[in-house]
Image 1 (cartoon, rainbow, N blue to C red):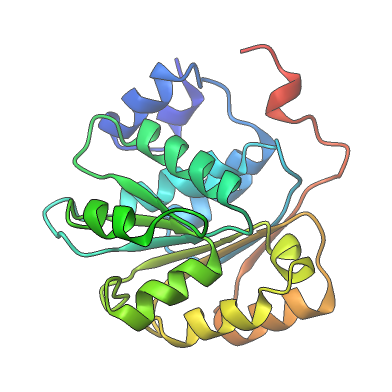
Image 2: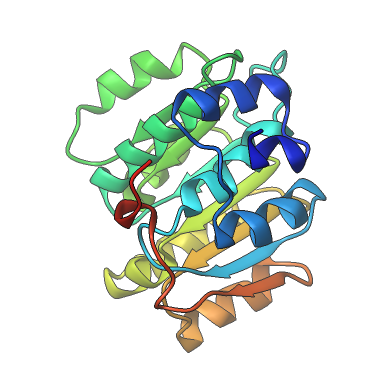
Length: 217
């Protein structure tokens, strides 16, 4: 039996994870999914390939009301490649629901993104600069947001996006649930968590943890 079933995942979301061959919980899943499902903020120190997209993606989908057409969840990523991959993964987990994620990033025609926004994605996975473009146009609104994830926050810091992240967080509702994942925890990242997170659960995984890419599924 899938270990994902044992932690109370919605059966339709569980079906999506099973299609991907997920059955075993990895350390980041075991430690991050339960508090996120309980509505707690989470800081996860975990490197790329450790399975963190499922760790935040599955609770994120679980929080969304399918009948509500507003954008309810936001994932911020430092690069377009990661935005595309995270949106693809979330759509795979949500395959048997009405929930869809849309990747929004620079370097692609904003008109194409405006067209896809008309399909009412419940989840936006975005690079900070392009998201701010949409916020200023009014084509993306965060008023119904429930859940925000900062993915690879240290890379966003390295790429000079922290001020953009702060602008976005200032324009989000104050009562949202927030998750922050980062391979390292420099002072600026901890400062972000102090300002925008409420008593977060801290999950610090070893840098030597085996990643999903090293495991034959």
